Amino acid sequence: MSRILVIRSSANGEASVSNRLIDAYLAAHPEAHVTERDLDANPVPHVTSASLAGIGRHAPEGDKFAETRALQDTLIAEVFDADLVVIGLPMYNFGMPSTLKSWFDFVGRAGTTFQYTAQGPEGLVKGKKAVIAHARAGKYDDASGFPFALAHTKALLSFIGITAVETVIAEGMAFGPDAAEAAIRNAVTQIANIA
Ligand SMILES: Cc1cc2nc3c(=O)[nH]c(=O)nc-3n(C[C@H](O)[C@H](O)[C@H](O)COP(=O)(O)O)c2cc1C
Image (tube, rainbow, N blue to C red; front, top):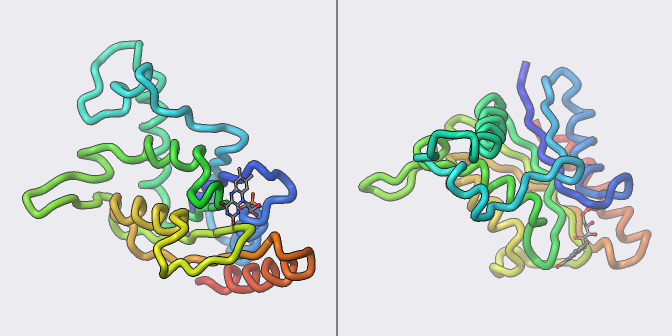
């Protein structure tokens, strides 16, 4: 049985397009064991001076950072336990939602999910796949390098070692309800057909 980790980051609740795509993917894989992490319902805190020392490779012993460290351990374990990570990626100001960025800030730990070698960085999360369910109001040419949401998300996944990534995009949500619904239906079909 495949193990799927779902990361949701939409603040749109029932109206969320990325969540609808994720649901379509899960409906097409009823046999999978699914772990859900909804960053809207349970956001990962921003990294601040109160938490930074707790998430590093050499986190100091002691209660002060124990909660942060424990959360990071849990988030990283969820990634290692999965065969496939499904990421809901709404576009916010051309990038990813800050809730998703915070999740990545916690998942990256030197010596655990990546390391630097004489040849450069090496991702340590090996043998996993990812599916990105991307939703955005506009229409863009990702090959142009702008906007950044998708490129940034793929770069962060690659940095920790996840390079087998499939992307489904529902775009043009702002082009009227008919165009939006057609784009969503098309993306739902695409994501449901990913093995
Ligand atoms: C704070 C915020 C910023 C947004 N910025 C952009 C943007 O830069 N480009 C864009 O195309 N859509 C933008 N949108 C629209 C969302 O990408 C769109 O509503 C999408 O459907 C969100 O995904 P969701 O439905 O899963 O929440 C923004 C929405 C919000 C709430």
